[in-house]
Length: 474
Image (cartoon, rainbow, N blue to C red):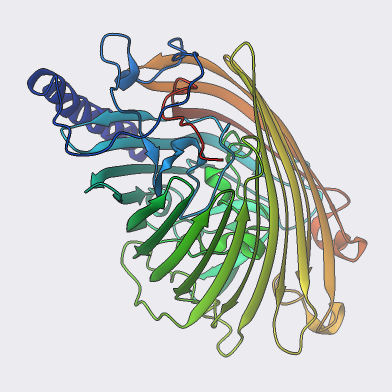
C-alpha cells in the first residue's frame, strides 16, 4: 500500500511539473514561433469532449497544435500503440497532454490496487492469493525537426518488482521467465522497473509516405500486436494474457533497433534485437546482444481497424533453456469504434505460435473486448493456449516428455468510475475467470478452477475525441 501511495503521489507531482511548464509556455509564448510546419487538421467540425478532457485540454487553454502520431505528423496520435505498433485511428486515448515552446508531451498510466485469488474454490493444489498492484506509467514527448522531420522519446516505469516482488502475482496456467533460478509457473512475472527508454526519428517523404528509425534500451521490436497493457480492449483488465509469451512478451527487450517505411495504409518494418528475455534483476539494465531479428507488415484499412502479421527469430529467450531458440509467428486484428454518447467498442483477436527445434509448435489464440460508456466499463477475454510439460513443470514420466495441454480461459468483468482526485480517475471493479484445462491436469488444478479479484483502478481521463486527430492522406 505504501508503494502504491508513492506511485500515486509521484503521478501528482509529475502532473504538477508538466502543468507548470505548460502554463509557463502559455504565458510567455502566446504566439509560438512558426519554425515548423503544422499538421493538417481534419475538416470535421467536432470539438473536444470537455466532460472527459485532460487538464491540458481545458477550454481556457486549448492546444494550438494537436499532438500527432509518434512516427508521422501526417497520422493521428490515436494510432500510437506500444513500440512502433499501430492501433486503429478511432482508439480512445487516455492521458494528459502538455506542451512547451517546441515540445509536446503525453502522460499515460494505469494501476490497480487489488485482492487476487486464483483457484477460488481450492479445487487443486496450484492456486494462491495475493494483495498487489499491477502498474505502469509512461511519458512520451516529441518535436518537429526542420520541415519534414519528427523526433520522439518514450520512457516507461513500473513498480511491479517493488510491490509484487520477484515472483510476481498468482495467475493459473501462466508461464514464462524465472525467479531464484526456477521457472515461474502459475504466476505472472513482474515487469522491469525501467520498462522502456527509447528514441525515434521519422522523415516525411510526402503526406502518404514516411521512413523512420527507433532504438530502445529497453524497447519493443517489430513483432506481435500492440502489447496487452496498451491495447484499449485490455486496459480494464489487471491480468496479463496467458498468451503473453506467444505474442507480445518482447515488449520489454534490452536492445532494439527498428527501421520502417509507411506508404498509405501499409507499413513494413524490421528489427534487430536481443532475444533473451529480461533477467531476474528487475532494477537494472541487461546486456544488449542484437542476436535476433523480426519483420512485421501492418495494414490499417480504415479508422476502425488495425491489422498485422509478423515473424521473428529469438535467440535463447529463456535463460533456463540455453541453446533453445524460438521462431515466433503472430497475426492480429484490433477494432475500435466510437459511438455517440461518449462510448467505445474495442476488440482484439490474435494468434501466435512458438516453434523450437525438434519440438511441436505451440499455439495460442485470444479474443478480448471492452465496452466503455461514461463511468462504466465492461470487459471480457477468451484464450486458448497450448502449454507443454516443461512449461507447467510437470513430471515427464507421468505426463509425457513432449505432451501439450490445451487450456481455455474465459474472463468477464466490469469497473465503475467512483471519483477523481486531481487528474487521476479512480474506479472500482472486479472480474471472474473460468478455466477449462486438459482433463489430464485435473489432479493438479481440479475441475474447472476459478480465479477472482476485486480492485481499485487509477488511470487518466479520456482525452477529447478530436484532440490530435488529423486528415489522413488517403
